[in-house]
Image (cartoon, rainbow, N blue to C red; front, side, top):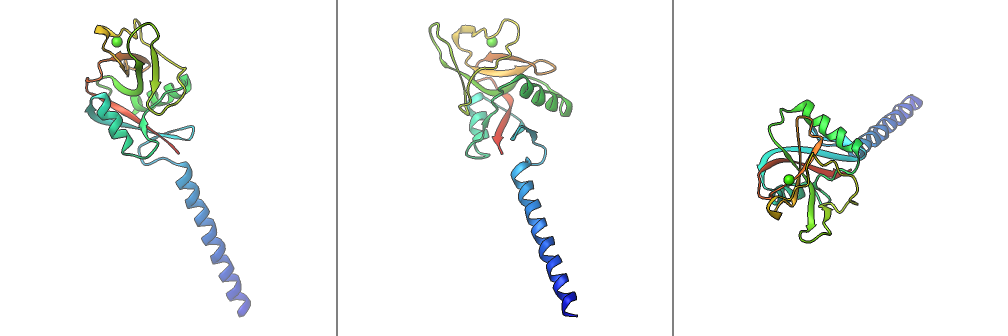
Length: 165
Ligand SMILES: [Ca+2]
């Protein structure tokens, strides 16, 4: 009789421990519902039209390291673009976290709002055009979202936020 109780007790403890580590694992490695998961980051397509600054401010409300999305490789670009175009009707360009930091002169300097190293770019034909010397914020556009354009920062677009896991 006592053996039976001990065994049951131990099984319960093990069950509890397994459940706990499973839950911790889920918490550490998965994204909120409807967010896109790619290489330990979560991305959310936000369907509210905002200017670029307001979009970045909204992304920051999701967490300390949350910003408009940086897109640092073709693999990341394709993953996000295909996830969004598969799930939604794309009606216009979408803000990402790239902006022109130094705005005048020959030495254009691009920056990501999350401070990621700038390297990968995928400009559309004829871009960045910097029309009227006033297009300092970057959006993805096209049916497959595989082109980038520098646009006026006060244009109002949907946007993508990115958070590290
Ligand atoms: Ca442009």
